[in-house]
Image (cartoon, rainbow, N blue to C red; front, side, top):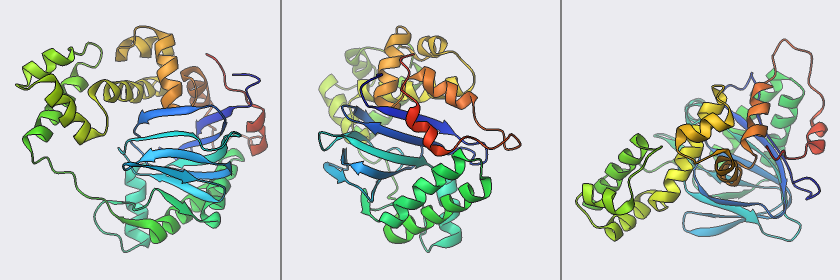
Length: 297
């Protein structure tokens, strides 16, 4: 991607355990339908991002935040020819629940009520979190993250609705999902999967899309990438991860991983291996990320 003007860095900081961090500038990049296990808090710096979420296209421009709850299907693309630049933090649900319990009146499972919030102050806090992580300032990074999440929950927070499987179609979709989870590397064809569940292929497609926001094959690709991320974090090579989750080879993993995570698996894993030791000397300033071109491996 050298010369394209697109850059991204996806990393973690040891003193923010479980929190993913991202800086990126995308122009032609398109994120396919996917989900995250964590919250997405993305602060737009320049340009416009368009993402489809909760049944509609959402537009986030400079000073606004794109906010996506865990396990919510969404996409992503540029809303203007020059693309968009942003920084993002991905806190796990348990951290957001802890912050909500301590600092807000939100009860139940906390989440964001609107997918876009225009709040330059909160957007600035997100960028300060990333800067503090880059500079190895653990106290600032942790403090600013908690302040940012608290502000966003107070301005745009509420209890997430509980998903209850009631209809026969929803129960069939849940059973199909369980089969695909168990047989991720060798899934059955749609017709056989439907027959084993006592339904028709089109009925299964409708039920699955209604329950999970995407058809079974798209959900399976998303789930494979999720599992590949865990394998890469555990030290597996991209080639090993690809075969383990059911991709035919590493190039297939590269393509799908980049379309969902935003960086290739090799670049993703290199950043994870370089998670900063809190006792090491301070990292280089955050501007260094701007010189990092996306790797093709």
